[in-house]
Amino acid sequence: MVDSSSPPQRQLDSKEDELELNKDLERLIDGAENISVQLTWMAYDMVALRTSSELAASMRKLEEAYQRCRIAVYGNREQEPEMDKCPEPAATALTQM
Image (cartoon, rainbow, N blue to C red):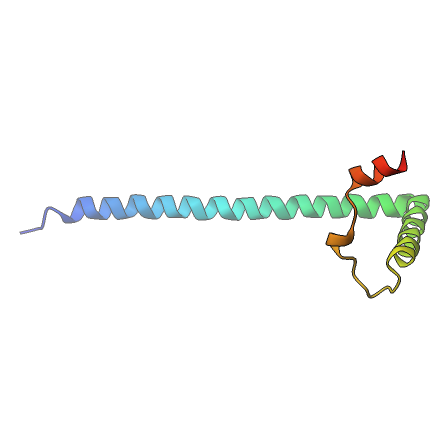
Protein backbone atom coordinates (compact mmCIF):
# COMPACT_ATOMS: atom_id res chain seq x y z
CA MET A 1 0.00 0.00 0.00
CA VAL A 2 1.03 3.56 -0.69
CA ASP A 3 1.55 5.88 2.27
CA SER A 4 -1.02 8.67 2.09
CA SER A 5 1.16 11.20 3.96
CA SER A 6 3.76 11.50 1.18
CA PRO A 7 1.87 13.70 -1.33
CA PRO A 8 0.99 16.53 1.14
CA GLN A 9 4.55 16.63 2.48
CA ARG A 10 5.96 16.82 -1.03
CA GLN A 11 3.53 19.62 -1.85
CA LEU A 12 4.66 21.60 1.23
CA ASP A 13 8.31 21.16 0.26
CA SER A 14 7.49 22.39 -3.22
CA LYS A 15 5.83 25.54 -1.85
CA GLU A 16 8.78 26.24 0.47
CA ASP A 17 11.20 25.75 -2.41
CA GLU A 18 9.15 28.11 -4.54
CA LEU A 19 9.13 30.78 -1.82
CA GLU A 20 12.88 30.44 -1.33
CA LEU A 21 13.45 30.69 -5.07
CA ASN A 22 11.31 33.83 -5.23
CA LYS A 23 13.34 35.42 -2.42
CA ASP A 24 16.59 34.55 -4.18
CA LEU A 25 15.32 36.01 -7.43
CA GLU A 26 14.24 39.22 -5.68
CA ARG A 27 17.72 39.60 -4.16
CA LEU A 28 19.34 39.06 -7.54
CA ILE A 29 17.04 41.59 -9.18
CA ASP A 30 17.78 44.16 -6.44
CA GLY A 31 21.51 43.63 -6.94
CA ALA A 32 21.18 44.02 -10.70
CA GLU A 33 19.16 47.23 -10.23
CA ASN A 34 21.80 48.66 -7.89
CA ILE A 35 24.55 47.88 -10.37
CA SER A 36 22.49 49.44 -13.14
CA VAL A 37 22.06 52.65 -11.15
CA GLN A 38 25.79 52.81 -10.40
CA LEU A 39 26.66 52.26 -14.06
CA THR A 40 24.20 54.97 -15.09
CA TRP A 41 25.80 57.49 -12.72
CA MET A 42 29.28 56.51 -13.89
CA ALA A 43 28.25 56.99 -17.53
CA TYR A 44 26.66 60.34 -16.68
CA ASP A 45 29.82 61.49 -14.89
CA MET A 46 32.00 60.43 -17.82
CA VAL A 47 29.83 62.24 -20.34
CA ALA A 48 29.69 65.37 -18.20
CA LEU A 49 33.46 65.44 -17.72
CA ARG A 50 34.24 64.70 -21.37
CA THR A 51 31.80 67.21 -22.85
CA SER A 52 32.66 70.06 -20.51
CA SER A 53 36.37 70.73 -20.21
CA GLU A 54 35.53 73.63 -17.89
CA LEU A 55 34.01 71.19 -15.43
CA ALA A 56 37.15 69.06 -15.28
CA ALA A 57 39.34 72.14 -14.79
CA SER A 58 36.97 73.45 -12.13
CA MET A 59 37.09 70.11 -10.30
CA ARG A 60 40.90 70.15 -10.35
CA LYS A 61 40.97 73.71 -8.96
CA LEU A 62 38.51 72.76 -6.25
CA GLU A 63 40.62 69.73 -5.27
CA GLU A 64 43.78 71.85 -5.14
CA ALA A 65 42.04 74.50 -3.02
CA TYR A 66 40.81 71.82 -0.66
CA GLN A 67 44.33 70.41 -0.27
CA ARG A 68 45.77 73.89 0.41
CA CYS A 69 43.12 74.58 3.05
CA ARG A 70 43.65 71.22 4.66
CA ILE A 71 47.41 71.81 4.88
CA ALA A 72 46.84 75.30 6.30
CA VAL A 73 44.43 74.04 8.94
CA TYR A 74 45.95 70.68 9.89
CA GLY A 75 49.58 71.12 8.91
CA ASN A 76 51.10 67.84 7.78
CA ARG A 77 49.29 66.22 4.85
CA GLU A 78 49.48 62.71 6.34
CA GLN A 79 47.96 63.87 9.61
CA GLU A 80 44.25 63.05 9.70
CA PRO A 81 41.93 65.57 11.35
CA GLU A 82 40.40 64.48 14.62
CA MET A 83 36.65 64.86 14.77
CA ASP A 84 36.75 65.72 18.50
CA LYS A 85 38.73 68.90 17.82
CA CYS A 86 36.46 70.17 15.03
CA PRO A 87 34.12 72.93 16.20
CA GLU A 88 30.43 72.62 15.62
CA PRO A 89 29.33 74.58 12.50
CA ALA A 90 26.62 76.41 14.46
CA ALA A 91 29.08 77.45 17.18
CA THR A 92 31.55 78.74 14.58
CA ALA A 93 28.87 80.76 12.81
CA LEU A 94 27.70 82.36 16.07
CA THR A 95 31.20 83.37 17.17
CA GLN A 96 31.90 85.00 13.81
CA MET A 97 28.84 87.30 14.06
